[in-house]
Length: 376
Ligand SMILES: Cc1cc2nc3c(=O)[nH]c(=O)nc-3n(C[C@H](O)[C@H](O)[C@H](O)COP(=O)(O)OP(=O)(O)OC[C@H]3O[C@@H](n4cnc5c(N)ncnc54)[C@H](O)[C@@H]3O)c2cc1C
Image (cartoon, rainbow, N blue to C red):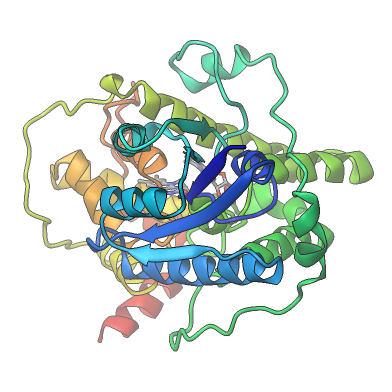
């Protein structure tokens, strides 16, 4: 019989988890390794810490220990493989973790699973998005069932984690798999999704906040897709459901583009030091991002566009800036969108007029006042 080490990465969940389904067919130990280098934002760090803690509890309720350690992946995995006579490592595969996979491959044979996107493979990459979307013929993969031994636990759990954030956050604290499932359920049951198209472009309270659990795999994108489709069957499709599904495909496209990332390359040589922002709308957005770790898509577009176009700040430095602050930072999605705003992927190479954006999205200056007040 195989003895498996299942290394959790950005798949901090039990539901729709093909890697876990595979591991549970064998004798296995689940493991999560916290990075010792502080590479992520403090907000993302909070999310990861809570999510891993919740996952540990779920495993414990099923008499399985999730081994958590901090340090070098190579050293920890090598030691665990020796200690537990591991014959194979199973883990998640993403475009942005290829180095890690090579490292693991040098320790033991590995089995990888693509579990963070709707499809496992795609037709050849194409620009623009609309042309690429038309090439997709297959339906997304269906979520895999929760391994039998875990099912009851996930469904019966209703306790939420006690969060310690003192600050008033602008987004829901979706820090565990249970909270993520409950958030999705509520979003559909209250029919909030129906109004998605009207709000998605706003400067505040715009979207579903699904990016938070998606970023660390607390929620499966295939489950989101399947649940929205089921909702459409019961309630008829509407503009809200249609547009949210469309955005999920933008997410896929971002991941696809990142996989073929030789197409994303910087163009003009530009400024390398973060500029001092001098427009009230930009200052307010910067304030919200740095204080809370979340800003809407509209705010992200405005900020990235201005940093690239108005201040000529290097686009990969903009990405790094977002990485330092966003709670839902996802390298592929961020690189794609930042490159897009910098004009590298957008043939229109648009420059936002900040006064017009302010007039359109914050006509009463309520957003600006709110965040500039916080600064003082
Ligand atoms: C400069 C810039 C940087 C960004 N960085 C990130 C990032 O690091 N992580 C991240 O998850 N998203 C990023 N986005 C995409 C988007 O802004 C966020 O996904 C969205 O604001 C998250 O809020 P929501 O879940 O309420 O979105 P909703 O509007 O409810 O959208 C639902 C889901 O669709 C997907 N989606 C929506 N818009 C986009 C988009 N433009 N590109 C790809 N997928 C999308 C996301 O998975 C999102 O959760 C970035 C966008 C820009 C312009």
